[in-house]
Length: 355
Image 1 (cartoon, rainbow, N blue to C red):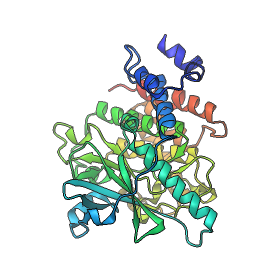
Image 2 (image 1 turned 180 degrees about the vertical axis):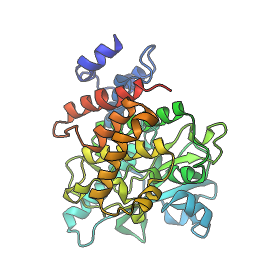
Image 3 (image 1 turned 180 degrees about the horizontal axis):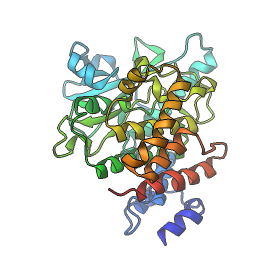
Image 4 (image 1 turned 45 degrees about the vertical axis):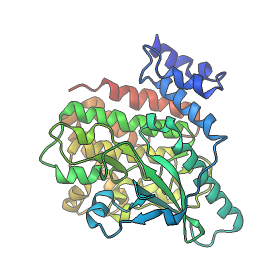
């Protein structure tokens, strides 16, 4: 019954509901927990709630930065770690606008950052496994260099997934745990897309985990999707600098990325993430051995791996999902159809994967 409703009446059933508290309650109804219609209700509640919430600008003098702590910089990537009001440990994700913006574009950049901050501040975003944003700071009163101040209910300092994989290549999690992570991240990205946003940097260095110990899988229990320094709304012109993960993580990008980001480009990145989870090894190490440095060559290598090696390693269903993402089979021209296709071709199929 739930499956039929999700497939046929999901959008129609939610359309008349405009009260966030009612939408939020859908997620906890018996038999609906974790379902796609429940996630859709959470996203719609988030959209309605953030329409009336203003972003909060924080005072720079309330922060004590910890840039000198190199260990934190290594495990957190490019994020800036700080203590807020002497008690709360946070990290900052800087959103930097392109050079030479006109006044209209500068205003759009500021408004987009404020809307994103407000959305990430809502309790609903926790159910989509996203960071908690407590406000915005300006760098030296520069409105084109804004920082999202983030925290999360995980052990600090968190480690990036790519750092954790690199440190624990010889301690792979069980196959069922890899499947769970794949479903977890696919649902998070689908929720973000349903809310009308493109992540633009959906990579393993933008996924934060707690600790390093894999023996009890605590480090992988509730990862947090981060890296919103370049996120923008669907249809909005690109006014952020292009994300690149310091160059080392560029293998996450489709060769056509020069023509602009899209939901389909985000799905390509998801496919790369699923491939990295399958091998449980940073893919940049495999690329070094292959001596491949163009995005087109990298894509061909990933496709070959997904076709020839992945089915025996992870099963044909998982390999098929990875190929669907890497080949950009799902068109994002129609948002409703795209969401339906993601549910049926990615999330549903990942739910079929069994160890």
